[in-house]
Amino acid sequence: MTGMASPSQNLRTEVRFPSGDGECAAWWYPSADAAPVVILGHGLGGVRDGGLEPFAERLAAAGYGVVVFDYRHFGESTGEPRQFVSIRRQHEDWASAVRWVRAERPGAPVVLHGTSYGGGHAITTAARDHSIAALIAQIPFTDGIAASRATSLPHSLKMTALGLTDLARAATNRARRCIPIVGPPGSTAAITSPGAVEGYRAMFPGSDPAQDMVTASSLLELPTYRPIRDAGRIACPALLCVAANDTVTPPAPAIQTAARIPQGEIRTYPMDHFDIYVGEGFERAVADQLEFLGRVFGRT
Image (cartoon, rainbow, N blue to C red):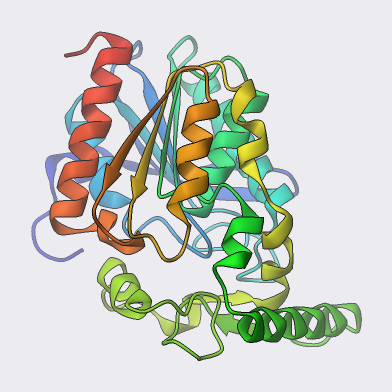
């Protein structure tokens, strides 16, 4: 960000917490000891300063503690190879963030706030940890089968071939094969839906193109990843914010996921995937999220 820092930015600190064989880097916006703490995690290849900061600022301004972390292998966190997405390791990172918050603020309610791929991770984490106080999943990845069906067969075959090539390179200690996270339709990129490049760039103005990549093998797990299967085991109140015109994470499975959560709520917006991070899309989503948390914790 450029220009004058906000009051919340002036209060936040850089922290690191252990996770698995390494560490995750995070921003910590402290709050009163008893206030709920919201943990924010990004989607496929995302890092802290790509669209999550505005949500963190609003939550902190409303009196919540906030943690925004980078997964291992990304951003300022440790982990080799760089730009590597592992569902198992990212689940570990979510659980590690929860442990860090509970050590830092014993007794404070913990809220999970996941976006896109991270929305799926937050759903699974809440299903595994019944002491989570509330869950927010926005534009969540909930069903890899449905997402695969929304992708053209030629693109899927190309991504699979590149992923297998990357695995072979890893097995022989050669440099990993990386692909862009977003690209125009027909290109060799993880996400090639119309408007994806423009939407992604709006989140990461002036970003380093070298960071806007993932190892090709990262995509091999996507078709079998189905957080929707965990929805019925979530014990806390949950809000799913769904983009009705989403071309990246299909909205129908997310709506079905919300219906399966015993205390699930849903808000739908007439927008595409990346619109929720900026402008009117952001304003509508963050207002609904603050209203939801206010009701859950009696802070309205």
